[in-house]
Structure formats: C-alpha cells, structure tokens
Image 1: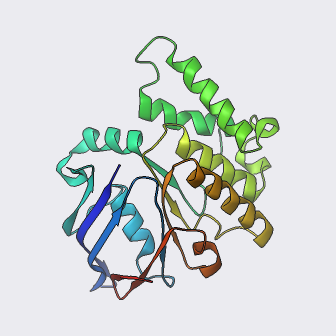
Image 2: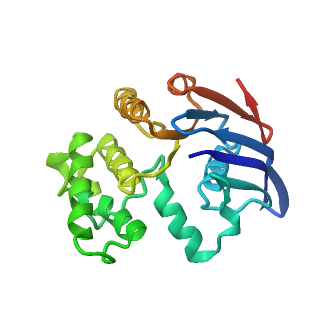
Length: 228
C-alpha cells in the first residue's frame, strides 16, 4: 500500500471569514511506515487526517491509495473503500455508549465487510473481534459498556475496532492525548507492536515524546508540512 496526498488545500468559513487551514500539503506514506505529523492545537492536523481517510473532501488536491484517488469515488463506493482499507483511532474514542466493547468492535466489521453477505461471516468476524480484544488485554472487559471502562480501556477498544477489517493504514488522531502518562505509554507500546508487525500508521500529535516512536516526523506549520 502506498498513500500519496498531493497539493491538499482546505479552507473553512469561521465567523464570517475564511480560514485557510491547509495550503498545498504533500505527503507520501509507504507500506509499513509510521509517520507522525506534529503541530500546535488548531494547526490543521485533524483536518489533514480526515482528508487522508476520506472523511472530508479537500477544496483542491488528491489522496491516492495505490493510485486510486479517493475523491473520484462517490457515495457508497467511497464509504466501502474507506471501511475496507482505512482504520481510524480518535482522541475521544467515538464508541457507541449503548453497545459493549465487543459489539463496538463488531459494528465496524458489519459495516466494512457486509457481515451477512456470505455464510460464516458473522462467526469469522466474531472470532477476530475476540482475538483482538484478547491481544489488547480486554478479554475480561468485552461485555462491559464504555461507561464502565477506563480511558485506556476505551482507547484499546477503539484500536481493536480500527483493526477489525485489517486496514492498509491506521490513522490515529492524538491517540494518547486524552490519557494520563502511564496509560498513554501503554497505548504507544501497542502502536509499536502493530508497527513491528508491518502496520502502516499515520499519527497526528502535539507531543514530541510520542512522535519519537515514528519512522518519520513531519511538522504542520502555517498549513504546510515540513520534514523534521
């Protein structure tokens, strides 16, 4: 998998005025690489990640996965491609409060793999969800709802959900930003293990210490990336 973002521009209208968040961003990520994007709060890091994952569209520019431009895909086609090839980890988890940990992981498989589309799919996805939760130290917490889990446990559930469809790339938005130092270090260790297994990762963070684990660091300053 090669991820290639070219000349990304994004402007938002805030308070009646235009704010240019991204000004011609270029980024290339090769298979198995871990790239950290650093920048101050409000610098556009999350916007960039959303564009890389097809959650938002740029005003100009392209995002290609192995030569396929995400923004040439429409509606459900884009949704299916994103669900199959991209995994997201958010700072605030985005877990569904009415579902338990296992169900939160499985719902991504239901969306991404059309779980009812072939015989045995439900059982296969359930087995993978159980394996991921076990691997992430959550076997005994699988039936607990998010409100009964700690911050670190919720983030681990979010990581399992992101991995359920075996994505080409994991996009992580401040994955340790809402955690205490010890729990954040544990999440960072999990990301290290995933990377060692060949997982491609793009992580945005404002924390220099966290970014040091990556293969490459890019600084987002005034809407443009600068290699560190």
